[in-house]
Amino acid sequence: MNSTTRYTLASFALLFLLGAFVATPGAVLPAWRLEFGVQEAMAAFFNAQLLGLLVGVSLATRLRRRHPLVPLAAVALGAGYAAMALAPAFGWVVLAAGVAGLAQGVLNVHANGLVGELHPERRVLMLNRVNAAFGLGAVSAPLLMTLLPWRVAFWGLALAFFASAVLAWGAPPTASVGRRVSWSSLRTALPLLLAVGLYVGVEASISAWSGAYLTELGYPLRLAGVLLSVYWLLLTLSRLGLAHWVAAAPLRRLRQLTAASLGVLAVIFWPPLAPLFPLAAVFYGPIFGTSFAYIQGRYGQEWTAGMFYAAALGSTLAPALFAWLPEPRWIPLGFLFLGGLLLVSLARAERRA
Image 1 (cartoon, rainbow, N blue to C red):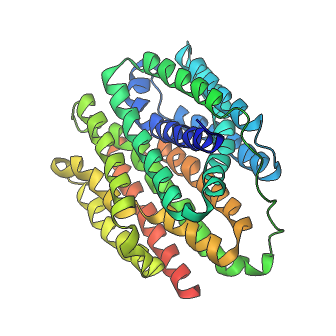
Image 2 (image 1 turned 60 degrees about the horizontal axis):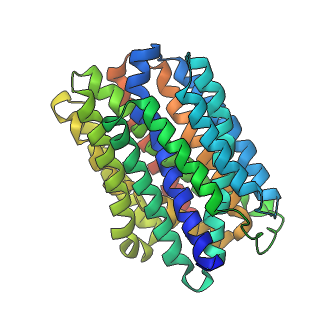
């Protein structure tokens, strides 16, 4: 195969596996609670991942060369999975999360950027497909944890990352270096950047804690895993199915979708309706891709790094806060609170557009 095809496949494979990585905590948390007895210790896991993620994004946005950075990051994330699979205590898992987070930051930046540069004439289409691959990866993690013991599943994901490193070997450098950020535009861009962080926070929190909530209510562990896969599948289908509708009036329609999502997050307080939580994903799917396109188009390529920083903070800090809830039955209240903040941020972004 030619180099364009190989590096395109490498990007799709890496983003598929990154989707699985993002969904891993929610898929494995019930098993970790049984084996390690963790609850508050999950905050340390997410904080270690956040620190690594911020370093990884900073590194990736400053270095123009992708080789050997991208293959090494894939190997590092595979090694993180292998270390967690061997962990005799949860402290090992926390340390591995920091390494994996750093690799995640590098791969998020470069796997997305590489696809856009390889296919400039079809950038929007290809990036939407990459986001779909990410979502399908997120669907696979809960299914994998349902079918296999979590340590065996982690070894499988480690090997997949090692294979993707081979595919990405020799990736070309970035086409250009980002321009210096103009802080004069921060006031208008900040609400949308905040919305990105809150969106990813809601998405990651539902992924990480929905299983704990369902099992606390007495639902089977296997059902929690299946519903989490449904959640990620609906997120992916929503991203593809609503893209054209949202594009007609991006910020207004994102706000409308978020307002509708609050209804789902409210009804799952009632235990018999708790398994309906995947329906929230129907309303959240287009948010990240639409925000990326809007920020890139209005503020320039340099601001997309801000999106990754916001997403890094949201994906780790928001789930970590749930570890401090008095009891798992309060988890839907956290979902609803974050969803309300997201709605406010999108409304402010719309007013400043």
